[in-house]
Amino acid sequence: MDEAAARSKLFDLADDGPAAALGVGVRLGLFAALAGGSMSAAELARGLGADSGALEVLADALVAVGLLEKDAPLYANAEVTAACLVPGAAYLGDRVVTGRPRGAEARLLRAVREGPRPVPSAAVPLPRALSRALYRDAQVLGPRLAQSLDLARSRHLLDVGGGLGGYAAAFCEAYPELRATVVDLPSVVREGRRLAGPRLEFVEGDFLRDPLPRGCDVVLASDILHGQRPSDAARLVCVLHDALEPGGLLVLRDVLMERERTAPRWGALFSLTLLAGPGSRCYAEDEVRGWLAEAGFVDVREAVVDTEGWDPNRVLLATKG
Ligand SMILES: C[S@@+](CC[C@H](N)C(=O)[O-])C[C@H]1O[C@@H](n2cnc3c(N)ncnc32)[C@H](O)[C@@H]1O
Image (cartoon, rainbow, N blue to C red; front, side, top):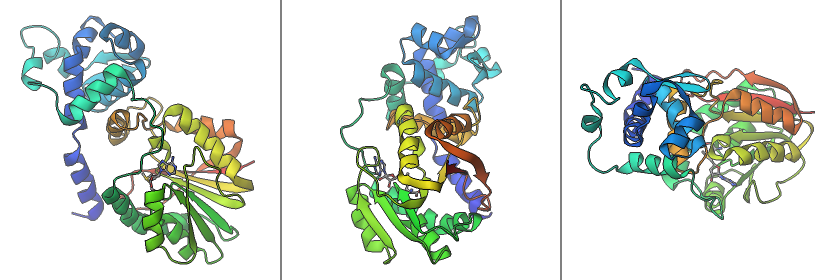
């Protein structure tokens, strides 16, 4: 088995999202509520006493795993849930969900009932081991991403939420005239400085609260947007636009969902984790393109990056008009 297939299999096996979504759907009575016919997320939320936005994320994930169907904006039971998760002789709800909710299911249940937690007063850095794992990924993917772009005339890269600097280092390696500034939270920057070579500058800061370094002709935002709640995601795109010199290039690498946000499956499930954590979700390509246009970006196009199946994220390029 090649490495990309092994990664995908292990991520899939480690994903507790399908069980959590099923459990929360049963506990809320969502499948029973749909026994009478299809309903929108807002109608379901009203009837079940849940948060409407959060319920939509849950319902989209349930579509992704085949337990609901979606004909936007309406959701309906799929064959399997109509057969065994609505009240009746074949009801299996009490067998598939037992005891008190725990772990991912408990966190998701709370988020769907109450909505995302209050916004924390300061941005929360990733766990250190995850930061390091993303750095190792960047060492593999960074050179491929850099090769897929033409930055020969670019001079200064700003890597926003650049983590330990793996992408910035790969870009500088591929383009000898380029220098890079990485902005991230203090604990991440401290470790990044230890790993980095002389061409990387690290700046401690919160990209939504602090002014960003100016004079950059390329901005990279890799794996950042999905960590922001919708209003902050739109604001961040404006911040990235402001940070660029006129004519500068934004490189935005992230999960890009299809319009209905039920595919790709892993993105719909990842949204459950985000909902219960930072209160964000994966965004549809249309939403992201809308924010880019509103911020003043032009010539939005997708970069073709050959990662040999390693990276399920996609990359949009946009020019500051
Ligand atoms: C998922 S990681 C992505 C890291 C790197 N860009 C990559 O693609 O591997 C998100 C990064 O954004 C940083 N981050 C999150 N919120 C931030 C904020 N408000 N200001 C600055 N950095 C932030 C985190 O510390 C983390 O390093």
